[in-house]
Every structure is written in structure tokens, then in C-alpha cells.
Amino acid sequence: MKRYGAKLGLGCVQEAYAAQAFYQAERTMVVTSAEDVTESCWNLAAATKTSFLLRADVEELARHLRKGRLDEAGWLCSSPHVPEISEKLPVLLEVETSRNKVQAGEYYYK
Image (cartoon, rainbow, N blue to C red; front, side, top):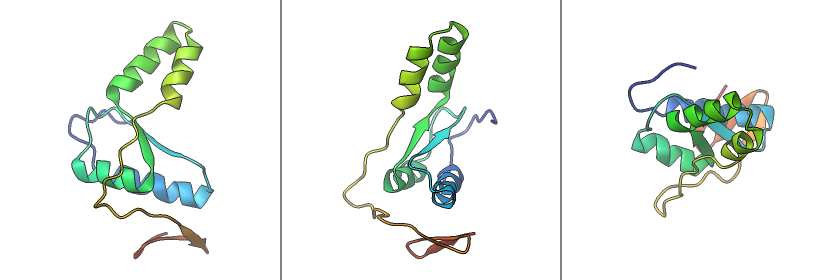
């Protein structure tokens, strides 16, 4: 984990979404030390149903774990920030995988 001072960009969501398709995971979450994300990153996260744990969440998680509050830590991880889907954003409904390529709309991830 890097300590980001600036807003988080699109790359983290793109990588997480490609990994979700490749590993056939049910959920995608970005855990970051950044305090905020760019609007385009938030929009892509909404379209791909990617959730976030931002710096304040990570700090709170660390406090709970240090004090042995596993229930609170578990709750925090199970209720991350989930971006709202805007009416004007395209939603990626299905991801096709074949031969280690992931197709999402017109884009391919290898």
C-alpha cells in the first residue's frame, strides 16, 4: 500500500475489475490510503460495482484491530463506500473471459 496524498485515479478500479473477472471473484474492493478519489474514478467504480475503503476507513480499521474489536473491524469491511450509479453512466452488465483476455464493452484487458 502506498500513501497517496492526491486523489486516486482510474487505474486502481481498472486493475481491480480486471482481477475480479480473471479470478472470477464475486466482489471488488479498493483499499487505499488516499483521502479521496477523482470523479472519473468514482464513476467507473459505480459502473463496475467496485467499492472503496479510504484512508479514514483504514485508520479506523487499524484502531479496531489494535484494540481487539474484531466485530467492529468485520462490520467496517463488510460496509465499504459503494458509489451510486448515475442515470447517464453505462453499466457493464456482463464480462466475457476467454484465453486470459477480459472484454468489458469495447475494451480488452490482458
